[in-house]
Image (cartoon, rainbow, N blue to C red; front, side):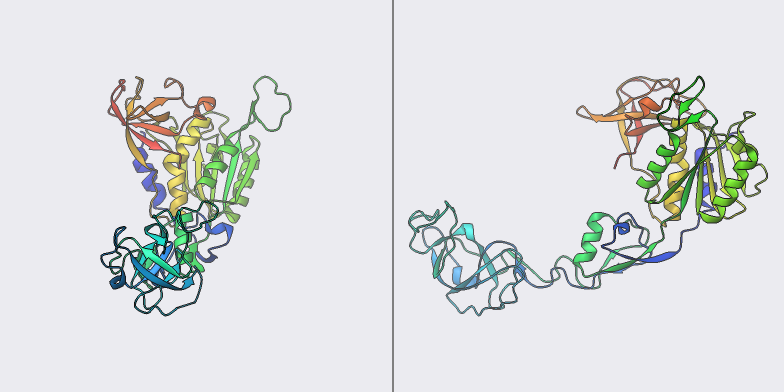
Length: 428
């Protein structure tokens, strides 16, 4: 009797433990995609100090109250503060300081007037036509005095210290991925190193005497090998940068020797091919003596035969069918969640959305149908099969155009054009 996909995944996840913790420098290439293992807190306030949100003039708000184009307030210009400057010029009543975006706000100022709302004192209009501007600059900077053309209340165009993130705030939680945006946020808050889970060591083992690599001629019965590229690539997309790929001939003794070696050196081994009931399915035969591994039929189409468990040598084994689309489906449903759990990731599933079927297709009664689709907007979100639903497992050519999988429940049956289905997105 077939087990459900949910049951098989649950069985696998019960046997997954996160990899050990290591320290990682945020500026190291391997930081991107790593999984945080402990709370990470901001060392500094963000911003670190009150600073200007605009290029303009730091002023006392009281000095520009009521300012307008008709009734400008003229202030003495007594200095300038650029971004990165440690200057803190004194601003007495009736004075202003040129200030650039991000520059620290002088202690005597409480507002910033954008340069666009000023003109050089003596100019006939806000564009500075009579001010002798050079280069066609529509907003020239004043040297000695500036006419302010709009009021700036206290706090206007000022970023207050800590208003984004106060020091001590948790910026990353265990299980979260170090994305580019998260790495930048941590670095801005003064964090240099974080605790993460060590990337799992994963091997991909492909079997099949019919498979050939390279560009040599093929004879009848031979096909190009592509599963190692598929699974290794999917693993890299799942945060596993280093993947060992191994090919094994259709020899049970040789396969057992390879599995024993990989099980001692790796955290996980993913195999493709040889897991079905056929006489030459050597993975099934080689795993028969592994007490921690089970081989089951899963109620899914494609990808019915699956294997999983702990090898005697210690590695987690995830055995997938050899047909490329079946292998890809098995990876998405079972391998990817297990690999993410091994990294301590809080979120194990891909994003799922609802989309309108752009065409009708036959279902797979009694099994979860996982159909490669193209997702597009027209103007609503729609999906269309990229392979013939009658023969999915081997359709590696059409599968290359998929950016999602339509998930049709075992009880649903056929899908009519215009009906809504669940789609698991596989593009980031």
